[in-house]
Image 1 (tube, rainbow, N blue to C red):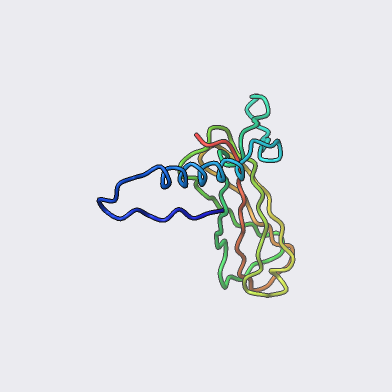
Image 2 (tube, rainbow, N blue to C red):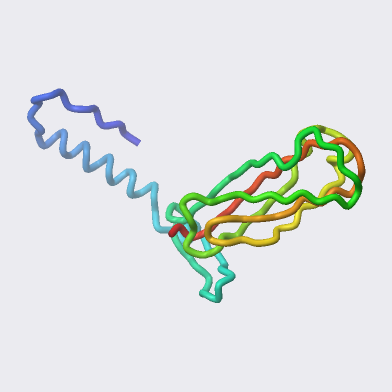
Length: 148
């Protein structure tokens, strides 16, 4: 795509320059098409119908949260976590959470994550440990939803 040079201060805008601007805008419009592959469908849990909107109009959050750091746990221990969305979503988003063994310990290799609640403003969950030992665990969060 062509890059339109910036005009000098006081430079008269002539037909050639306006033509270059129009040509650049048309190039952008061609690249950002309304093809069906540019849409995202998001299910909602509130009873509202599936929401389909342009991908550029959806909201994605990638989050990271340390749950425990250099902590000794026993098998079946649980640690709760919460992550706030700011600004809020219109409907509760679809959220995926995965554990990260940041301490690279055997106890950190045997964990599971359970989401307790997902609202328009927050996700809450629990990390459950399957093995006793020292552990440092974080979670990665991905939330996709309809902006408020």
